[in-house]
Structure formats: C-alpha cells, structure tokens
Length: 607
Image (spheres, rainbow, N blue to C red):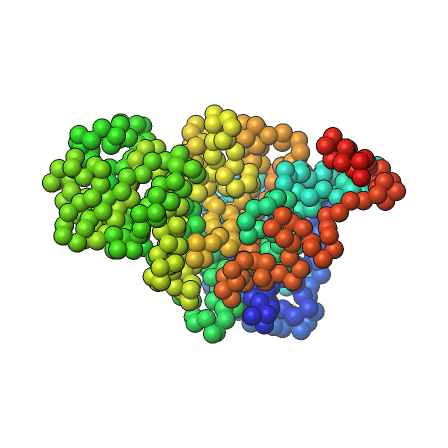
C-alpha cells in the first residue's frame, strides 16, 4: 500500500512538472537581451547543457494535457515546416513586424503578417499591452540570413503567424499583495504580535492561482490542509491533498492527467482500471441517483413516473403534479417482497420523514400478481401496466414512491437507495461488490446556489473563483441561477475523492461575481483581482483527497485507519489530550486571554 502511495505521488510530480532532472520545468525560460522590459516578469537563465540535450525526450511531457503543441523555448531548425500552436505572454512588440512570445520555458519570435487580408491580426497584436496573454498558430520558418539570434535557444527560427487568439488583456502589473481573505471554517493560530493571527489553510487555492499568473506553467504539491469541521462523520481536522494547477488547460486536460496518474499508480493486485473514466452531468446524477456522488456499482436507479399519473384521479398524486416543480418518482427493490420486512419499510418511512419531511407510498407486487398498497385499489389497469413498464417491476418486487418537490423527492430516494442496499447486504445479498472500483466524473454543477437562510441571495456552489460554462456565460448577468460551472468532481464508489475547476481568469468577470452576485467585499481580494488584470492565463486545477483514496483502495472503513496519528470523532488527540487548556502565563506572550462561558467559568471556580 505504501509503495503504491509513493508511486502515485511520484507520477503526479513527473507528469505535472516534467521529467528533466535537476531543472523544474517552471523555472526553464531563456533570458535574452531581446525584448527586456522593466515591468516584465523575471526570465530565467537557460538550463544546464545536459538538460537541454535531453529536451526532445521530454517535450511531450511539457505539452501534455494543455492546448499548446510546443513551448516557447523548444522550437529549433528541426521543426521548420511544422504548424505549431503556442501560448504565452507578449514580451515585446517591434514596429508592427513581430512580437516576442514568452512562457515558462523560453521565448519565440512570431512574425506578424503584413497582408491586407490579415490586417485585423496586425491591429489586434499591435494594440495589445505587453504581458497580455495570447495563443498563436503558425508555421515554423527559418530566420532570414544574418538575422539569427544565437543568444536565444529558438534564435534560428521564427513562427509565421496564421491565427491569434486573445486569452486575457493585461492592464497593469501588481506590485503589492494584501492579506488573503479568511475562511469561515479555518483554524486560527495566535502569533506573538499583538492582535495578529495565522489562519491555517483549507487549501492553497489563491496561492496556486497566483503562481499561474506569475508564469509558472504547472504546479503540484502534496499539501497538508486543515478544516475545522467539528464532528462530521469520517472527516479529520487535518488531511492530505494532492494539489494540482496548470496553465492553458481545459477540463479534459485535467481529467486526462488525473486518469493517467491513477492508472499508473493503481495497485496491481486490485486489477487494472479502465480509462477514460465515464462521466455524467450533475443533473443526471441527481435525477438518477439523488446525490452528486453516486455509487454506480449497483442499479436501483430513481425513475420518474410522473407521466404515468398525469391524468390520475388519485388526489395526492394530482396535488403533487400541480406544483411548479412537482414530480412522482420511484425506486424498485428486486424481490423486495421476500427480502424486506415490515419493520424495514417502517424504518424507511421514518427516515424519509425525519430527515426530509417526505411521505412515502409502498407498492408490493406479489408472486400471484396481486398488488398490496393502501392505494392499489385506486390504480387503473392502464396505470398499473404503465407503472410496471416504466419501473421494470416484476412479481415479488417492491416499489417506493415519493411525490412533491423535485429536489426533495430526489434527495429522499437517493438516501433510501443507499439504505436499501445496506438492508439487503445485511441479509446476505451481494449489492455492492467490494472488489469493484467504479470511477466517475460528475460535471456541469450549478455555479451558484440559493442561500438556505435567504433564498433570494446566492452563494458559490463550490468557491467564487470557478469559471462558468462558456455556453452559459451570457446568463450570468440575467439568470445566474441557471449558469452551469466548469467544476468537476471525481467519484469512486459513491465517495468524492477529488474536485477541481477551470478558474475565472478575467478580472471584470471575477469582480462582477464577487460584488454583484455574491455581494462580497472585493476589497479582501484586491491582490487576486490585480493579478487577474495583469495578464492571467487560462488555468485550472484539481485536488485529490489522498487519505480517502488510499482508504477506499485498501478497503478501510474510515480514513482514520490510513492516517498515522488520527484524531477522534470529535477532533481530539487522545494520546496528548489535545486540544487542552493553556494557563494564563502561557498565553501571555500571545497577548490573548480566554473569555470563559458563564457555566464553564462557574465550574472552574468551584473546582
């Protein structure tokens, strides 16, 4: 197990950063006298000769999963005649004749066409501020005789431009950074400076985005994260993530990277895993499974039978379907007549009522073809036939019916689906194969959700830096509740093991989301907004929960079983008795004191 965990960590490092020994890909950029600018990001010296000699062997790694074909530092005479796509920052523009394009790996000269038919390209490139982010497509050609620049690794060639795409316009470069906004569930640690505290990160989200703005092409980290979640089941206050961020990438690139590293590091004794992983939309997951992290190892899907009862005379069904979002949905339990006891049905009914305030209706189709239900006598023969056809109901099956609001009905049946699986497995029925590993991508989550306490206001479904789905971008200004996001979750056997998104890289859009939709104080994020306004590339990332992934892989019942020094259910360290009280003398250097609640203060005084 531990050897495979190490392989997983190594593979993501190898894939995300590149394989050149002793020279991180993010630090490889050519430094030349050509195109220097006082406000440019720093360029780095060329790599050692050994690393340069091996460049061709590793170039495919540097261009994997992203939208470019080559980096700005790798083109040479061997590429002459090839069509290439480069992504980077405008380092320099000279007299409307050419630009110098820069990325993490180096510089490439791009020749601007002078023909009348391409005047729009020339106009765009000549008017763009330096440090704007663009993607260019063109053909590699040799530089004219006598014009080679031997100080550049790409100095013998140039790219004749065919197409250019503006990815982000730079307005001004930031030179200061304000403190980061603090999260509501973060641990606060006092410092020796009066009134100053550290905030332990839930994740390095903003930091890694700033790395992308700064020109680092790919980042990864085995990150220790902290979250004050109280006593949530199967959670830990400190946990480990494999954290990844990449520039010039889309959802598919991130997904391919993650699938590749999991496939490479997967334990041989668990059998191979097939890639690419299947995917479904968030709405499909909710409609079919009632949850956004479905366990697809077994069926028992939720089935919408609203049409069966569209013209029914049964009053409670008519009332449900007359609602704006009213539905009638069901799940079918194969041979439930034999396997489910009366108490099981009572427990399911109690669970639905207690957790979701949802009523249930049960229909049992016995082996002799008779129906058992308080409402069976009200069903017409047509309704019975259509219900059997829609739900694939057979003799000895039990149908659980729920009516009402679509969201509440789906959530209820999703919970009952899992509870029924637990009941059947307790009776010795194999429902979820413990040796099966079903990976699944869930896509197209909503970008915003109504706040529970104030439904007329919105909150981010994940975090406020997630980009909208391009197909829905126009709705963000008029109907934000209908906008899908570019967020993606990776699910394994009904457990979320990873989540990420393509980020907003446009400053105006990010400010609008913060101020106009979320009603947040954007002043706390001025450092990020300034960075986005300074030539931020399109970027995205993902974080994999390493503890949960390992727990599921080895069949552990809880993540505590795979963590060296886990905390208890309430977040306590039972060996060191932490968290514990601290004396006033020990608190003195931190300039803080404890304000005890009245009842605790009374108990301490009496003792």
